[in-house]
Length: 176
Image 1 (cartoon, rainbow, N blue to C red):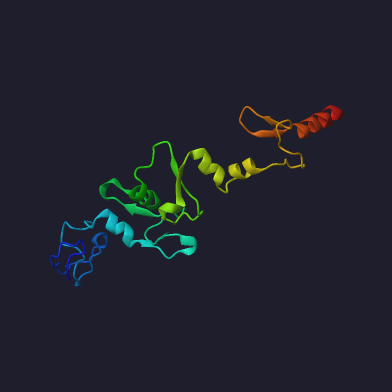
Image 2 (cartoon, rainbow, N blue to C red):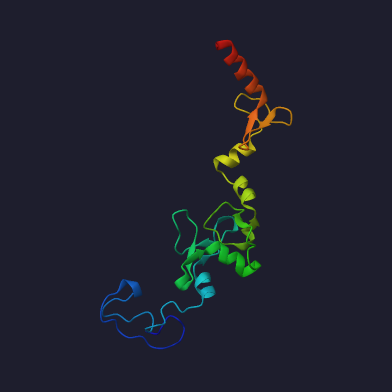
């Protein structure tokens, strides 16, 4: 068996099992000593991409973190997110004040056409979290519209319905 880094050198038979280097006793090693992980980053990246996903998504088949984002090792510096690497391969560096938004809503997708560099606020408001759900509301809980005249913005930045506030104050005055 030959070294998987591409150097073409024959590998030795492993004398013991070592999971750190994927060595199994009695079987040929995958890499010549010192060559482990020498395959170029771009080559390793594309070997873990499945371009046949639904809706044109390129699915990451390698390691995924607890949130479902693909991660790839870049050596001693640790791991980086696969979709960021994909975007940077095609479009160049991501500006420091921007972050990537998955337009397809699939966090395992690394298709650079499905990624857009946006501000943190824009990315949050496009999501499905409570902040974005509240921002998209056009009516309060009691059905009053959030418009220019019926909306009060609190110091914390949240919206309050003026009609509901007036009704709440009337009820409080009547109970006292």
